Image (cartoon, rainbow, N blue to C red; front, side):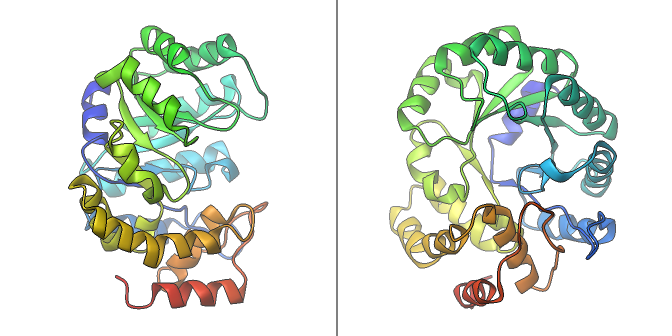
Length: 301
């Protein structure tokens, strides 16, 4: 699909960010991953992001990344777009972009460059170099050491026609308002904060029609129902779901650094779809935390 077609589909529904499945010794577990993707497709996500943040992109070698994306493309078989993570320094990001395109991905999620902080000119050059190396549509992930303002983003859009999406991982409402007012429908806007459900309703008013749901991994029907309530602006349903599940879930997630991924894999384990351990430097939930999550999930589907 063209970058424009890709952007339109991405904004049409809830986005699935599956975990990457590992064996007990840390190797990629292809059969388990395939089974998980097949199950998630039953709940009609608008797109699936292979080897994204929830998929522990940061822990994968280039060969592992290529394998994960290739398997996702094969298993999804064109039913929804497959979007691959892409990041690190500029030269490495180009390698990952090429690997994703070779594997058959439909688009890229461009993470911040590794470690360093840079000014606007440097970030623009980084994004342009990566975008020039691929024909795929690119979603720019605004977070951490690569936060752009509305003017910088407008320049990126002028220089990079295949930048068709903007994923916010900052939570700055004024910044999002400025960006949406300046760029309008030039971009598809994606909510990308950890446990994005918390911000979904207020962000909808700023043109953010979709978001990445990690909860979709283990409670896909709940995630789908919540998204539907957001889109119809059902404040009562959203508030009830936040009070009864999402906020208590966040309280477990916030007990330790890195738990945004760990708690998802814990949820997978509790529903009988064990995705294996997280890779270091992340750590898995303790037994007590796993028990607390089990109690919270009781009765939910």
